[in-house]
Image 1 (cartoon, rainbow, N blue to C red):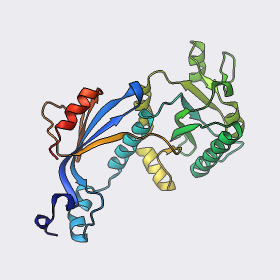
Image 2 (image 1 turned 60 degrees about the vertical axis):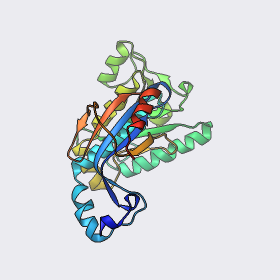
Image 3 (image 1 turned 45 degrees about the vertical axis):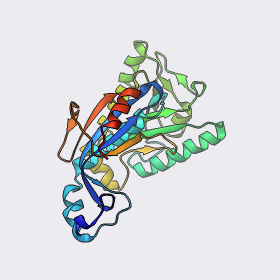
Length: 275
């Protein structure tokens, strides 16, 4: 392919590109600048020769890159939606095969859908699976909103629960039990979210090499979410002057910077795009 014969907008890949995004909602907004070495141009076809030189080389898919992408998407969904609770849900071995992640996901998704219909609710969720210490049994962590507090029961001292949860309840932390989930699947707990950004970062820790390899072997997903969730808003793409901007992360293929949101900052950054 002769790139010189193509106009800039027809070139399948553009180099040294910046993506400007706004994460969050209402008073929880943040700006993210993502600088990539090579950015694919949407809608432009690529011949095999060019693909082999660029896409198969620069964008070589490795496990570490897959983990990074999953972490980024989990954080995006976690930070951009108004979650009420941090949720942990397990499976009761007497009711379910705890090793069957695919069935767990399908049944849980269907059950929440039916729960919404039966209770006239609009519960949304984002779940990240995690293996128990036995290396084969699954549970999930994540976020829920739209579940009324009236449908939950607060744990109190003396209730049956794990040691870590019992310590939280003993010191006065508010933790709820969703008994409808417990009757269907197994033990669970829900904690009201106090620091939205911190818990959004925290949940990405479950995304690691062990999880990535395990779900690949099962042909499953590294995270699950309901439809209709909000994603970050992409404001601008193109070449940008990064003068005076210090990246928060620098990698082999990309770097990025997090900035506090303000209308003035967003306007300033948008004006620094060259094209």
